[in-house]
Structures are given as C-alpha cells and as structure tokens.
Image (tube, rainbow, N blue to C red; front, side, top):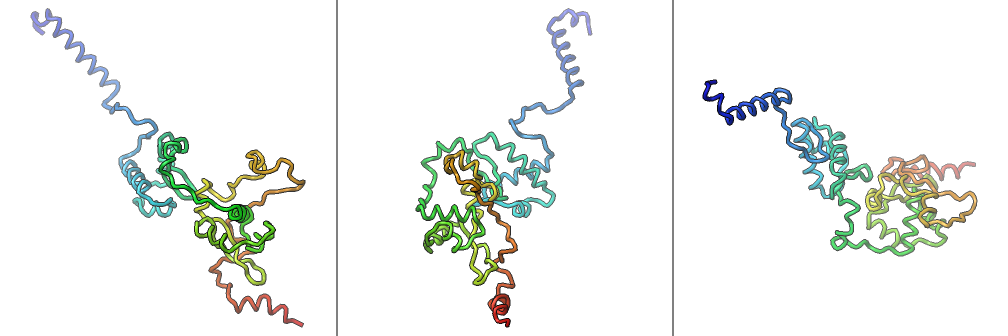
Length: 261
C-alpha cells in the first residue's frame, strides 16, 4: 500500500470490512442460512420430492387412502411411513390436518376452525330414535343378528331401519352365525368409524366415559357392563363368502344329527 493510500480513511475502512467478512466466512462456511418454515424438517432432495408427491396425492384424494394405495402411488423407494409421520407433524398446527381414521389417511379441516365452515357443511341426515337405538346396539354388540337386536330393544326391528343404516353405509353385513338357519350378522363399517372420528371400533366410549358425558344413569344396576365390540370374525361366525356356507353342508351339519337314532 502506498503512502497516499495509507492516509485515506475510506480505503482503510473498506479493507477492514473485507477482512472481517472473509474471517466470518472461514468460520461459518458457505451454508445456506435462509430461514425454514416452522415445522419443516431438513431432508434429502429425493425425500423432499417424495414428500411433494404425497402432499399432492392426499390433496387430490376423494376418500381416505390406506397404506397399500399410498405405496402403490409413490415410488418404490419412498419411505411412506416416515413421510406420513412428517406430514402429520407438519400439518398439525395448520388449518388442514392429516389424520388417520380406520387405518386410512385423509386431509381434513382443523377441528377448531369448524365454526367458519358451518355454512358450507352438509346437514347430516336426521335419524329416528328407532334407527339410533338400532345403530347403537349394532355398534356395541357386533357381531349381532336381527333377532338379537330385537331381544335387546324389546321390540321388532323394521326392515326399513336396517335398510336405511346400510344405505348410509354405517352398517354392513358381516357374516353368518354358526347356528341353525345361519342368520346374517351385522356390524359397523369404516364409514361409521370415519363419521364419528374413531380409529378402531374398540375406541367407542366405555361405561365410565358414558357416565361422565351424562349418557348413562349414574345409578346403574350392579354388574352392569358395556359390551366390547369386535370387527374380527370369531369361531361363532362365518364370513359371507365362506366355502362351507352351502345348503347341502348345512343339512349335513344339523339335519344329519337330528336323523340319528
């Protein structure tokens, strides 16, 4: 530096600033310090592309998607479970949440924002008291036959009531009871779980929860219990498509025994 330059305070300030910047870069490296959106996690470029695909898939889906469908749509090397977990966390504080219902995934509006959508929601179909009672019995006593429903209610069940519940896709035919006549058994469907926000049928409220909600008399009889429903086909029940459900075998199983001396 010449004697003239050393007497110029402006050049001295610029030189010091350049040195300071070079020193800071040496210590911090050349990392991108741009702020990230809250909730998003650093991932590889490949995973980021898979995440974008998952977002598009969930946004465009007309109904909840199960894991097999998601895996079939995304690339074979996509970490679907990890991507869903990340998306569920990322969307938790937003106006749209990723939720799991009946072992399927869907996007839905955040529950605390329901008040601003009240004019846009479809009005649910009002059920009669008979239909509500029948639905409750099926939900808690499944698998249950029509005769068993009537036994619990104490009155005959109208065919129109069961038809209505099946038309709404809240009730389905499960199988047949292993008893003479092989009566069909009824149970709830995935649509029932989705409508009431349940992941599994055993998430239905129990006796203590029903009492706390004021839906059960606090002075229940001694020994009163709430049934434990199941969606698993048990030994007392045959699937509707069971190969043994043949008229001839029905006579072999039951009529043959009666004919013995």
